[in-house]
Length: 91
Length: 142
Ligand SMILES: [Zn+2]
Image (tube, rainbow over the protein chains, first blue to last red):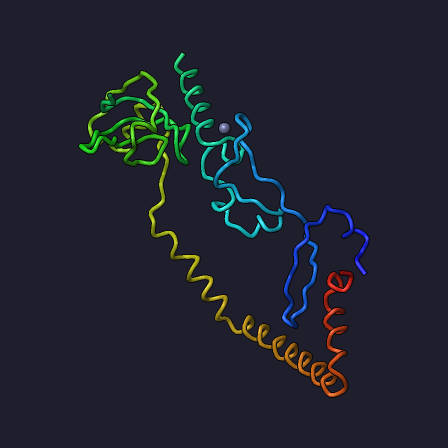
């Protein structure tokens, strides 16, 4: 019998083929949605996606680009922001 | 566009947002850059000019550039630093206490695993399933 918490769709479902030849429904926690740029809303490239425990297993460089504003802004938007900053310092 | 001594801000890469000075212009169109960033070749697309320029010789050293910028020079470690931790790890792994601890539980685990497997196989093959379920309670609920 399925446990009560698995009846709601908060858990993702997947059919798994068991070694004995059976077909079983497995319930797993869903992945979070992909990271998006804070200014333009595009999907961020190079940002790892997964549950926090899974992300902790990755190295620091595999989680997020090694750029300022990485993980919050996409590269064109971060470039614009850095150019703005540089021009403000001039004036 | 860029001359030796021009002060720029890097826009791309891990040094983005840091100020640097053009130290050399290369034939390939790239530019050699030094300062708060690492000393490296750089595409001019990745630089934002600040309009200032300093008296810096072509191919100037890190300290000379940082003096001109009014910043303190960063002390960069030589790349040989990786040797020490490796030696320490080997010493701990090969040490007598570590190996003894590892060996002992392996033997115990193997003995435990062998005994229960032998018993149900003799009685009935069907009993194997509930024992597996008992090990993983999450699976049993499904
Ligand atoms: Zn963006």
